[in-house]
Length: 60
Image 1 (cartoon, rainbow, N blue to C red):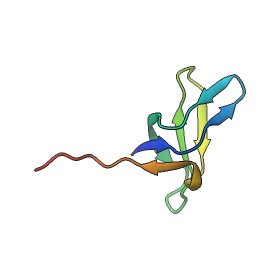
Image 2 (cartoon, rainbow, N blue to C red):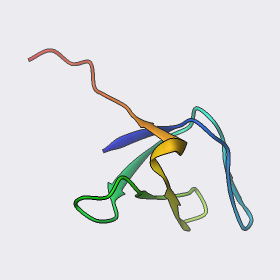
Image 3 (cartoon, rainbow, N blue to C red):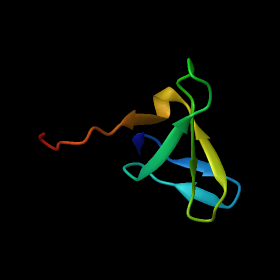
Image 4 (cartoon, helix red, strand yellow):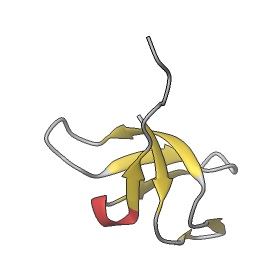
């Protein structure tokens, strides 16, 4: 799923800023916590209050 951050995330040397979009996967099927890869290659987790899902606006 594609997510957009609603808060800045700082994880060690990595900083992910509000508005940036990432491809993410859910940690567990019933969880709202997602994991994505920062530009450095480090995996970062975001909680439901730190992101929103981005929906595609393509028509079929």
